[in-house]
Image (cartoon, rainbow, N blue to C red; front, side):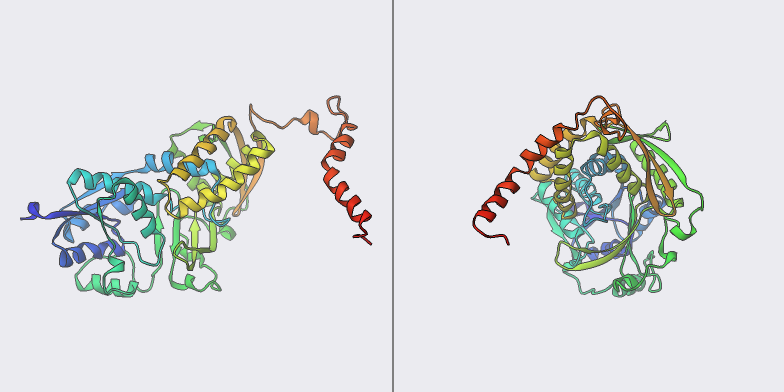
Length: 406
């Protein structure tokens, strides 16, 4: 009987990969399949999943609203760190995987499952992100990764497998991009993007207006932060999920947030992707502006070093590690005074600073002015330069003495 079988929990999205994994698991394992769909902001894509999962052989499906946890526990810590992978990627897929995997483990424990299955390929980063989270939270759970086992070799093979079993799929051979969508972004990979010489088609964009088609008039936004966290948009307080949704709409209509890049995957190969991250792009720009007046030089510069490592940890799936947790503790300490308001001008894909203020600002117009002031003694600079340049002076004297300089 079904109830006597061992259970496997499947990370289920209803996309091409997981649409065929349920029947594949039924055909190749004697497990009861429990589907789990994590709602991280993909919206209407989740509506038909319940009927679809059961129709294709799952015994039940959990549709879990993870949006608030996703933003507060994963997006905002990464935003506060200023973490960007290889200068462009705002980590939209990367930090969505650990929040989903965390819930997979929780449901596997609740259901008494012995295994977790995911649809990540053997070429990608997601397999690492899912599995490192599972290992960190419950190492006793078995992991099944069909892409590393089955005979299917391509997306076209998947489509044919699904069609042979009468499974509805969200792609066709004519529109064959691999996409991942959540509250933070939409990614596009594969198809004509596999050649880096090919310019992305405007028709590919599903969130952002192509910059050339954005309004000819600039739009201004104002964002209030408290300790590095955005809390108000244009003077109105929003919960974290709603704030990002509103910013996505504003950024998208102004062509903001399209990033085209060739990135270095953790598994060793380079891959080309196009990311649409309108709200996130605005938040990163605003947060950076606010830090420019609230952090001292040494802290800001060291935090920029930390940001590179933080992004690498998130990209590589190392969210549940002592190092990431320690870096977040450092970041949180730096954010105690990152409170204030930022104004930005959005125009045809550009995010332009248009004003910043904070009650904790370290900027002093009185000290920085080019006009007359009564607080800065310019003669002090001579002694500072003499001491700061002393190592250079001593080396030059030695070189002259030894005849090392012409």
